[in-house]
Length: 137
Image (cartoon, rainbow, N blue to C red):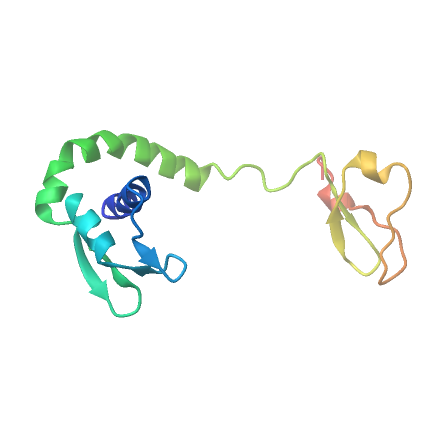
């Protein structure tokens, strides 16, 4: 991941300096990109299809970023933990599932369903709130 950040920073540097660093809609990285990446401490090697894009972080560059990496370890771990466990509720109780006779399901706010039925065009029956999806079920 640490090699990706300077890679993207090289693109940002090219933009600020108004340097054309890619072609083919940004897919092919040219030698100007290679030079910019090297200025940021990367090793840039040529990929046979997308040009000077293969990015490696040399040990010396990693060592110079060691303090920054240490500072970021804790916030990144917190974010990753939240990303994995913080998915939230599986369903929205304010938008209960409604089903028709053929078994199709839709989620509709009660205020949308209240004025009149929503009819399935396949089985010609109205969508009704699914009792199995009710909050107390």
